[in-house]
Amino acid sequence: MYEKGLRRRQEILDRAIEVFAARGAQGTSLRAIGEAIGVSHAALKHYFDSREELLIEVYRAAEERLVAEDEPETTVVGIMTSAARRNHSVPGLVQLYSTLVASALEAGHEPARQFFSARFAGLREMLIGRITEEQRAGRIRPDITPGAAAALIIAASDGLQTQWLLDPEVDIEESLTLLEALLSTSTPVP
Image 1 (spheres, rainbow, N blue to C red):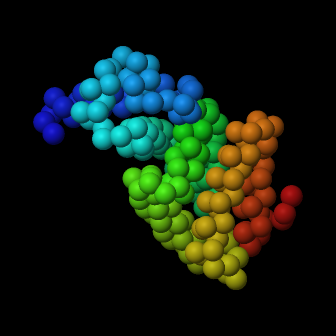
Image 2: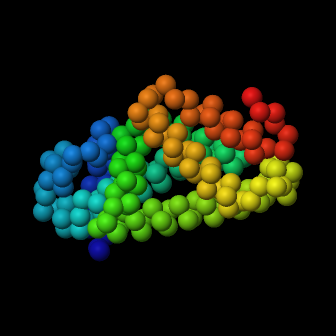
């Protein structure tokens, strides 16, 4: 794709991020997305093969933008707490994420399956490295398998965000703080 085409694609993504951050992805066809962001259906089809591809790219771009704004976290669970705090301000993107994960589990949604399989594998790998470092430093219990702990941290964060979408009274940070205490060698469980 030429530079002009790349710029136009990015403009479409930027506008789509605003729309999805505000209202999520439920019930939006490519045509409806195009109307909401002021782009023709044909233009969307030129830059994105399917609605699913557009949604994945919107989520990826929004996540990259939000992560770039974050302060670096020092603890393993703190990484997920920071992400949850960040996501709290954009419930439409949390809903988009949940919608995409659900479709990744259905037959016929290979782009979403590939995206989330790679995303979860990369996230687990990063967390395993951090957990191993924390164990060496004596901050995380040595009797915990890093791979299992990484999967648990991701599951807790995602599950808590799903609960929060259904009930905004769910305190994600409090629950993740408890998880961090359970993993810690020195922090008493609150």
